[in-house]
Length: 241
Image (tube, rainbow, N blue to C red):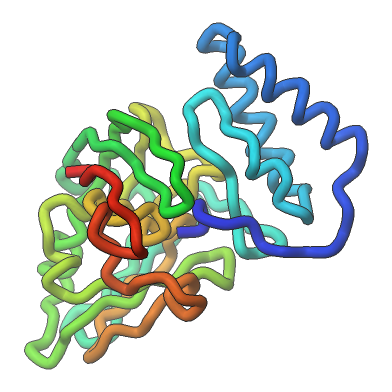
């Protein structure tokens, strides 16, 4: 997931943004929840303008870090957002945000574990089970995997078909009991509860059913394709589900 690593770029961050970010990071440690929400919004906005990824080194009030592998990401809302389901299916479909909200929603609470080591406990996610969208599309017998694409234009991810059909894999619309904001991958992201967070692709725009697993962005750079928490990438973290 784009939440995993900052892209390496050479342009220096502005001194004012950097010092302001450090100051707000210190405040966030002791601030009341309203100030923490403000800090989260600030860091999300600063990350969009930070070509170095330094803002990603500071946790916000919720413990997450903001990373993207693209230099900029367009913003989508209910009027402009679209999610396509295509590939080896009999019924290719395009969903609006309202279409997804109208489907039955599943809520789950799990720890979020990043492969770089940080963990956010007891994080609520809510959305549509991916298996529901696959069933509606009528997946063909030759299908074996899913490829996910994102409207940042860069990030991709993958799951086997059996992994994608798990009950704890969501096309998520809400996180921490509020609509997904842009910095957290909104308005729609993938959420794969039992895997490291790079599998939970932000800014989800495409679900393509394929005949083989096609490694995603970080997997092409050495990360495990099967990213079970505590059983992959050489880590022994406690499982998230």
